[in-house]
Length: 120
Image 1 (tube, rainbow, N blue to C red):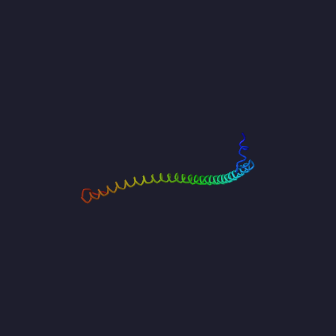
Image 2: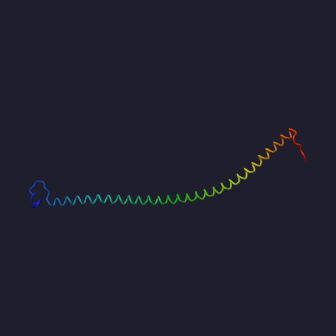
Image 3: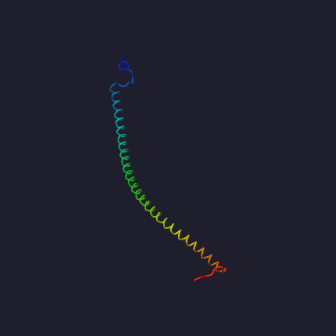
């Protein structure tokens, strides 16, 4: 049983040539749509490539800044260490000064009280 031969007499039924033309038109439309999608995909890829190049450039810049900052931190740590040493020395001197000041005040108090004689 051949369906085309059995339905040829129906009104409004497309002929095999009309069906072929319709199918060709659908394929052409699909091809155009795929071409548009491909063009857009290529543009998107170009955009992504540019974004990656920008990101790599920014990364290199950030790495350079990081290295400079790390070098500065190392330098500042050295200065802090040096200043800590100076502060330690100054604290020793301050403590010695405080002891001498306290001793002097005690001596002055004793002199005023007449408990100590000054000898040359």
